[in-house]
Image (cartoon, rainbow, N blue to C red):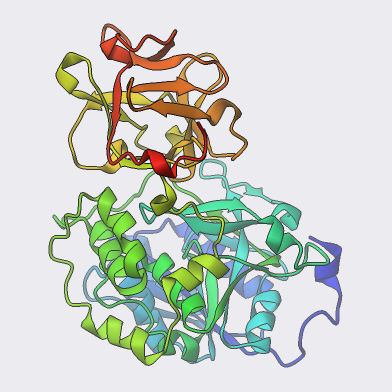
Length: 460
């Protein structure tokens, strides 16, 4: 741990106490107990008011009487059971309803808290009750359960893309300049959402979570946006470390036919994102479905006199690429083979270094929604089309042009790579993208950018 974190006089002497809320559904016995014991063993007794275990309708036997009998040894632990499957968001609200401490601390049920994890979080809220704080999240290996400690000198902060998916990115230079050492809390535009502390009254003032949200998804961005826009700050605290198991896939199955993440995200965008919501809506083909009544959430925002989303982007997340500043948005369609094929990105987050693909054009946005920036980048939000001599693939945008610089010539319909001077083409067997010597008469090299506006282009 950073030496400055260990200074005995670093934190206030009269810190508020907290209720630690841990929601679980069919969690493994050893993993759940590791979480609970790390909280009990590594939290100062006077700061830990209670641990509230919210059972979201588990059906595994070890989580019934066995768990209750075990926890009788630990009077600070309360077990609350949902009468039906509620999902993470509503389970967290059940926990908040039973909490009696002034600060709520949420943890997932597969964590390990380290020595000294709690005091730095409560100290920030002790100084300002409108500060929402998150620990540095370290990795617990999901096969060996080993704790992988991460030095917090290189702390990342949370962001999001225009698909309204959370992502991590490096601490911006402007934020580094605010600090004299790496132990100081850093501003974060968003939170991951699973591990954080918040003043209970401030959480209630912000309207807790949107009751129209289902199961999980989007609640972290909603809480992040309204924290900043409605008078608070969101910080990551480098002196607080909590390990977390990141599962390769979700162990839960839902029978709901509704795409809950999409429904939640639509509600989030319509309430908090003002005119910028259109960038998300374009990605879902402007298909809204039934997202429920949002009038009470709009009223909440009005009542709290929250700032605009433009203020948030200008002041909290100026690094975010704004699609409205691009020269083209939408599909990139090839003229060959009756114009059936479009650029199609790898579908999963882990596929960012895989080759950009081809797929029949479907007009549904999603993996075929591309942007061309005024600087000559072909983007999928924070990922750019990159060519280094072999495959054409996606790579994090670096802003340095080079392998990510492309020129589009609308008269010839060619997409030319800046450094190699080759042009993008479909292979003759229609299986992949390839780079070729430019020839505007070859249909396989001809592309049509949707909504192209040449006057906005800064590179020619």
